Length: 276
Figure (spheres, one colour):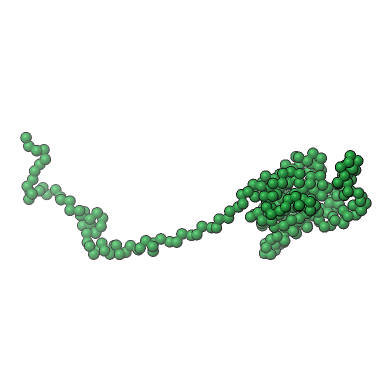
């Protein structure tokens, strides 16, 4: 039985049979010219790897925000949340906000304020200055897209204040400060300014009122039933007096003074842009 493969003598291959020599019909071996000198030229034309690669651009610097301070600030109440907890003064605070009309220059300055700021209002919810001033500052901040405000009552947990100002003696500060106090932080949570409790123009009015009611400040420490009743009566009287003051021009003083303070925190070129 013959082998199924056809056998040919070595010198008798058919004309259509070709031996694979590694060259194609163009005289190339696997796509490379079958010529040593030409191959050397092709290799010489390839640039070194370090000449082909271009330098990668440096990434922008990473700014790490102090997350604990951000969380502490956001844990404080918004103005709307603060109003919900003010059983006695909530309605009046709402009215004072609605009564506030921003000066055109102030509104324009706040609308174009270039820097990111976070303002913490440390307040006494029952204090006449808080009722008078907090709605004005809130209205002003609401017109500034890059500024946010939170409210912290002095009778609440003050851990957030301690986290925002770790070097502050909170108890000593509460003894020293007249509330409200507005603490202004930049985007890196560095304290840039502090304002409060009232515009300078109101100081004269308040001194005149206190001279008419010299027992008012002493009554603040009187825990007797009669003392508490008298203090509440005078406080209500002062709140109404302040409402008249601010509706008669002190609101404009408050807006201008606070806006000027914020403008002073900017670099000179930025301040010039806001003024224009």
